[in-house]
Image 1 (cartoon, helix red, strand yellow):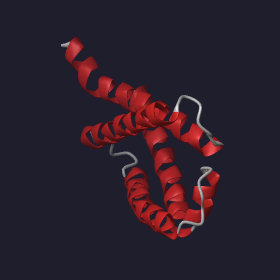
Image 2 (spheres, one colour; image 1 turned 45 degrees about the vertical axis):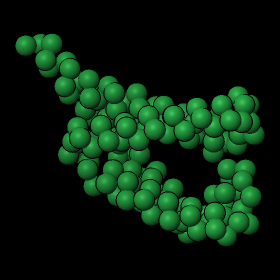
Image 3 (cartoon, rainbow, N blue to C red; image 1 turned 90 degrees about the vertical axis):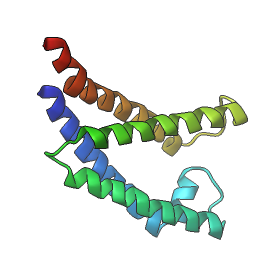
Image 4 (cartoon, rainbow, N blue to C red; image 1 turned 60 degrees about the vertical axis):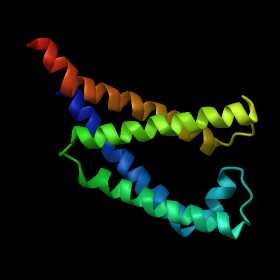
Length: 135
């Protein structure tokens, strides 16, 4: 029960973070590009980032709306996204080396993804594995 409460708070704050991030990606993509250390003058890249922002907003809305109603299927889907994100990160390291030019935003993205994956795994363990062991 404690893990569910912790997860609920973490996922709610993740939702708020995604709402803010989604708004930034959608409304000021060139600023986000610059924060990531990328050229911010590419209009096509800014347009793609703004479209991606709408998906981040959707995730944020879901996170805020699901407060008090955590569903394992949603948490599993978010964990799948974390795993895919980490796979892409590893691919980037393989292509660009271990120490590319990283900004604060790059580091934040890595560590928040790892943190959220650990919380999701703990939540799913408490929800599914632990009750089976008690029977």
